[in-house]
Image 1 (cartoon, one colour):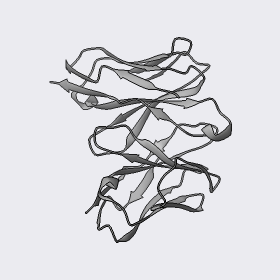
Image 2 (cartoon, helix red, strand yellow; image 1 turned 90 degrees about the vertical axis):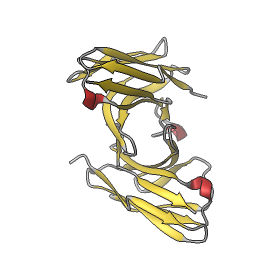
Image 3 (cartoon, chains in turn red, orange; image 1 turned 120 degrees about the horizontal axis):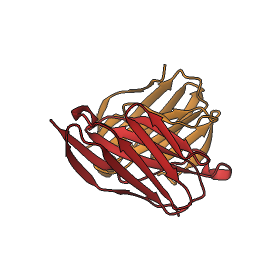
Length: 116
Length: 112
């Protein structure tokens, strides 16, 4: 059974800092990995999706890397801003086929607070 | 347009009521999902529809009944719920070949 762990559970940083969020998974047979952010009481916003054949994806100040063999992904946020404060979730999708279609396994999330 | 809409935003119901949650997307996605999220927990998958057919049911109690009338619309019918079913219910959709899941804002459900 796939298990996804995110470290740290919570992180508080001053504005302007570069930071790294970690995600690890136990079964390396993944199809892709997706990073989301969730504001309190809201739905999830997709940030980046990395296919299993890729090593990294970038969008603006965000960079996500994937090392499938070691079961790890990191989300790097450059020059953090108070608006980045949210819960960040990573989710892995098993290899395509059979009844695994569309099933994401989520980590518990990292609660990020960026203070001015 | 990368928007998934959900109605209602909030719902309060008694244990004997029947209600429905609605989800809509116009992105041409052919996969749609229902998730349940309790406070401070990640979303838990409930159902997956692929090309309007139910493809995954994660052993959800029968008091939750999904329906996909067409490729843009997904409903979740609720009947005889329990207080522990109170949660945020999230709908998502994806195009099978891109697989990025786009989430709606959710319906906050309270069962009294």
